[in-house]
Length: 110
Ligand SMILES: [Zn+2]
Image (tube, rainbow, N blue to C red; front, side):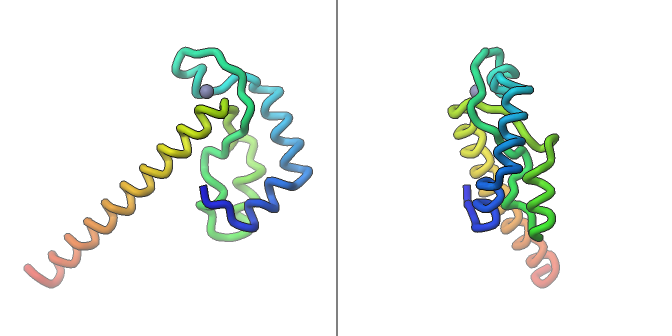
């Protein structure tokens, strides 16, 4: 996960620490484990839509403090989720590049 300066600032904020605590007390079990039939305590709070996917500062702040954008996860699921997100992004970029090439060929070479 790319942690830029704005992200670091948000995560160190008192407001975030409070929200994180609130999320973990409302949803103390790992949401992914629960979905997959395991019962495990959550220790981390994940942003479903990554903060760094936002372009503007305002959007980053909105994503960071949107309670509906949070997910309680155990460390293992958090790592797994980020690994999957990373490879999804890579696939997406690869597909987009391939599509651009097709568009280019359609436009200029046919
Ligand atoms: Zn889990």
